Image (cartoon, rainbow, N blue to C red):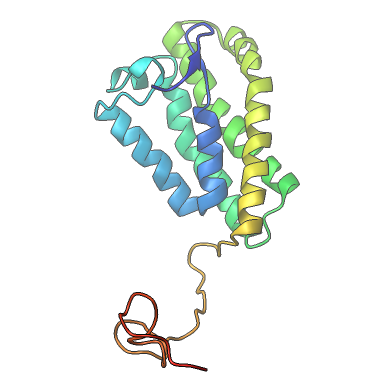
Length: 192
């Protein structure tokens, strides 16, 4: 069950971290698709939200705008990340996460929350500031993790061709001289 700290009608969760991390690692297309898939599964009734909630009701409540903002936020982070790759760096990555994962998500979520709760916009904006330190920490963690992953496993941006070495073997992909030898083949390796 997802972890949440209840703070009024909008809980503090780690889902914002996932929304920043998915496009930081996967890029715009795949990262946004991951977020959309999560939201579709949630809307279909899977209990993926804090408290084991799922279905349409959470989308109609005060958190609904934030959840819809995740799509736009993931797209912004992903598009900016795609421009950086293959040289993902921490500071630009952090800026991407703050812009897409905080500013864009708040831009959609805060007005939605104000309307649903019937509070004034100013009161809702002030209330949203309670979440800012935690969201900034999530942006830092996402940028650190993404920088480490991209450094260890460079991922080309979506849509760019990667030249792989050609296999010289047969249909099974074995290289010349490897077919029928080795520990799993039942025959000994020829001496070199």
